[in-house]
Length: 212
Image 1: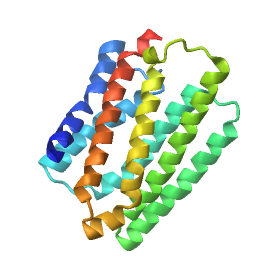
Image 2 (image 1 turned 45 degrees about the vertical axis):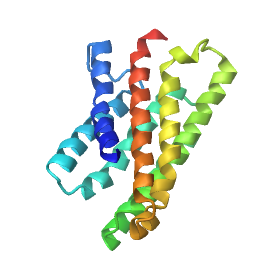
Image 3 (image 1 turned 90 degrees about the horizontal axis):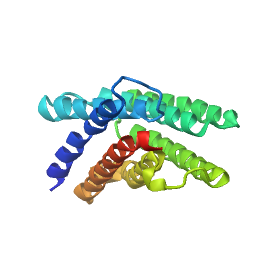
């Protein structure tokens, strides 16, 4: 069951990109979500071919991925919310550079691939929650969206919130899980299922982008 959902999640990861191309008929970065769609597409291809098929060493990929992941999320929320107080986003940017730098230092010094994941994922989760709260706050202040079910940002933010809140504990407790094999497949299944939900919501969101 775990393998089946993993393969489905990887396959579905390439669909938002093709829906984006079909809907826009061009390679445009006008929409805030586009960089994240590209990242999901590339990650799905790499993990399918590089990890599962060729069984390449993924340690460098998983060290590089949080950097581009945060960049895509930062671009999405900054462009979507257009914050009046840009200093807060500047603080998040500086903090991420520090957190990411520390995770690379820890990984190189101790050859540890679990703790760096935990600290970067924790920061990404906090940033996503911050951005989601800002979006909801703006939504209630402006009240300019009559139907959330037809709004692409609703699906994107819902997907981010579900994914990062679901996988947060998995990465935070990764050392304990891997060292003791305690419910490893249960936690891994939650991670895969959350990834699948995120990618399905990305597809729905991209499909709705031109309907706002």
